[in-house]
Image (cartoon, rainbow, N blue to C red; front, side, top):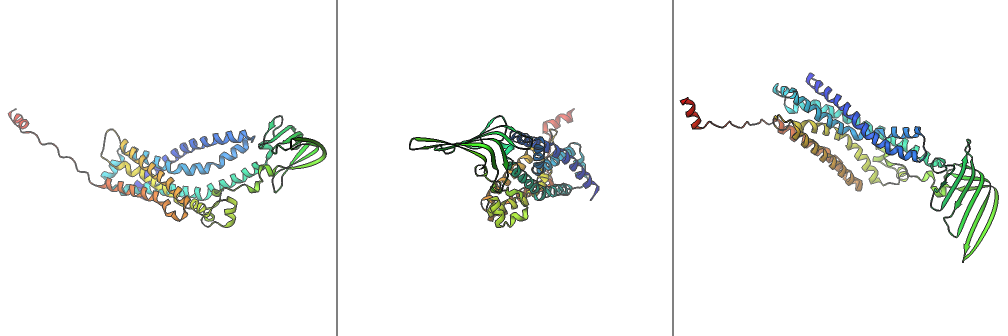
Length: 385
């Protein structure tokens, strides 16, 4: 690689690191705040919140990379132009296409980063998050077993616990099941335990009583039974953990391209949706070099102006917005029918064509406007003087 290429590449990589750090911080903090409020309201600890926010970081980085590449390319090109370095390079005989070579290398480096994220780190982080969400969903104590207050885990259910012992025992429990108005049940126990099972959590009550209120044809019957131990299936109310659908995006790209019956059953999705997710992953890294080239090629258009190149910046931003819009539309089309998978490559193709047209337009020789000829009167006056 020539020295000029290494110089431009080093400039863009340095700016890319700065913009990526700023944009990732903004996006990540925004997602972390909403996630923090949700987890803290569910009674989770600070370590759980920190773990979940860290697991969202790969996804945030994958979203930010193309935008950071565009910002670094546009800002770097603007600085090269304002400091007359770009003019000197062109005056030495380097064409716009030749100057775009290190920019393309820069875009390919960002594309490899994006591919490593969307095919490796992001699915792994989603898989880990899905496992942790399943564990938290099974931890009923963290969700609604809070001592000293009435809780309503489902419609028609009321739960009160005086205290929770250090060994996990629930002390002085009151539980009312009024889902059926004609058959209301009220449980009370001095102690209770939560036991996990394959069908979900079970509530084992000890040393308590069961009060049943039955209504039949306007008549009411109240019965009271005492028990030494009684088991209540909470999994039938809350839904067993094994029935929770797994996130399709937590699987590898290879598994989504050729989904088997086990994957479809675990995720509750269809083959078209699984393949559309895989095709979207394959096309996503291509947006990085397109974004980098848009930030460079569009700024080469037009002639020199003392007011700067703000017009070119506006056009390059609009071109990037167009590519992003087409990417979202293509993902929606493929999600409806995976047979249309070539559509996902259309945004990157259109962006590449825009870059090629901009470079071709920038390499065309510009014709200078001829200076106005002096009038006859002005020439006569000059000779007379």
